[in-house]
Structure formats: structure tokens, C-alpha cells
Image (cartoon, rainbow, N blue to C red; front, side, top):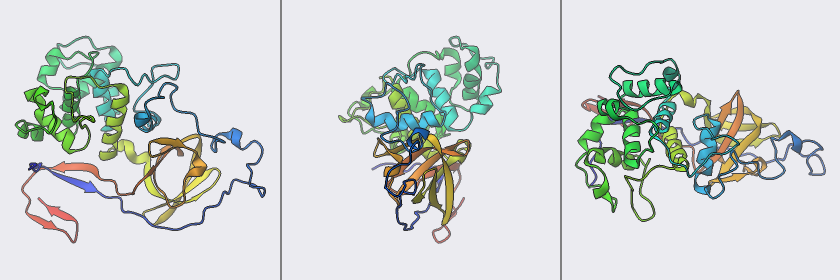
Length: 337
């Protein structure tokens, strides 16, 4: 029987919305065809839109996550429009991704000195702030200050440790160090990482492969990194999410999409290169069905990413509180600690 994680997590639920509307191809002329030159503008592609990177064919399971995180500016390519999805992720990249998802990157950019106790491998000047802030936030610990090698590939159990610490669950991880993990290779997980791996699995962030192996000593590929941190980003409510909107499609126009959000109609202008995903596949904007639930990402007040989702209920970890539960009021959705 799984143990209950003692720390209470407050969730926000974006309520399901309902509306009905009649779909109309408002951008078409009377003959049902696109007006001359409209397709050239790019926001309504005549076919499937160009992928974010040129080298992600064969990684369909990760394509949506790669596109979403790239559009949000949380991951970058390797030049020449390449993402290098099969390349291993190093420890520095993992730490940077954790800081970005938590909304702490701007703080890192303000720091130009490593902690005095840092005795690890050389850190390039541009990365100093990330390493220093990671230590300040508890993602890296005293041992890391002595042995951290920023450009060494990160092992999967190490990635689990960094992410759980970023979430502030170090104490909970320590409480679960004696758990019996559900993976066939559970004995390969270092004893000091069991609690981190346990929590990552409980939160649905990192799980086993199709043979139920966690592969703790294996390295994380960049495609896997995108999927992991996209999952994390959807669970964490941070300052970087103010450009994210969840709602139900009410109407589609040639340059705008209308959503019903919290009972109100909201109009959003489309970016010329908007990417639309459904069931992990890139689809045409005009193929979005009226009534679909979607998540949209905004950049410069324009929609750059649309994802069709099953429902609009999205559990997000806002704040973690510790204490003794004194009262639970289901009618008011309230917990008194």
C-alpha cells in the first residue's frame, strides 16, 4: 500500500467550461476557397505547419513537448535549426531547466559569482548565476559544491534529485528513502536517491519504460528532457505561466481564436507561425473543432502554440504548506492547518 505524502499540496482546478457554437470558415470567400495571398501570410497554412526543428522526425512521442518548451523559451536548439533530440543532457542543462520552469531564471541572471565553498569543475561565466542560484534554492547541496561537474551527462536518478529539490520536497524525499520502488531494476537505484525517484513516480513526472525499468544510471536524452520538463511545467504554477490560457474553443477566425474562459469570451490574435498539436501530432489550425478544450501559449500578446486537450481541469501545485490539519471543509474547498 502506498504511503501518503505528509505535506499538503494545494491544487487549483480550472473548472471545465461548456458552450456551443456553430463552426464557420470565416476566412474563406463565397466559393469556399482561401482568398489569394492569404496562405502566404502563414497563420493559416495550406498544409501542415513546419516543425520547430528539422531533426525531430522519429521522435513523435516528444515532438509536442519539444515544440511547446521551445516556443516558451525554456529549451533551445543546437544551431542550424537542430535540436539534437538523442544527445545526452548534462547536469548544468538539467539545473537550468529546473530554474526556468520554477520561474527563477531572471534571479540567476543577476548573480555573477559562485558560492565561496564551490570546488567543483569549471563553470563558464554565462552559467555562474545558474549554479549559484541552484545552490541557494537547495537544488544543489554541499556535496555538489565539492564535486559538481556541470558538463557531465546527468544520470536519471540525479535528474530526479534535482527536480524534487526544486519543488521543495527534500524533506519528503528523505522520509521515503526506504520505499520499495515498483521498478524491476529498483535495486539499481542508489540508496540515497530512492526517495527522489519514489516522489517523481508518484507525481507522474518520471516513470518506467515499457519493460518497467527506471534505468537510474542511464542518461537522459534531450527529447526525454523536453517531455519531463513539459510535464513539470504543467504541474507547477509559476510566474512564467501568465502567458498560458486554458479554455474552450468558441469560434475560429482567420486571424483570431475565440475561447470561453471562466464563463467569458476572450479573443486572441494568432501569430503567423502558430503551432497546433492534438494527440501528439501537428495539425492544421483550421482543423481545430469548435468546442475543443485547449491550452494556448502567448508571446508578445499573440498565440504561438495551441494544444488540444481532453479536459480543462488542470491540477497545479501552487504552494506547499506544512503543519497539522485541524479542519477540512469540503463545502468551501478549504483546509485549515
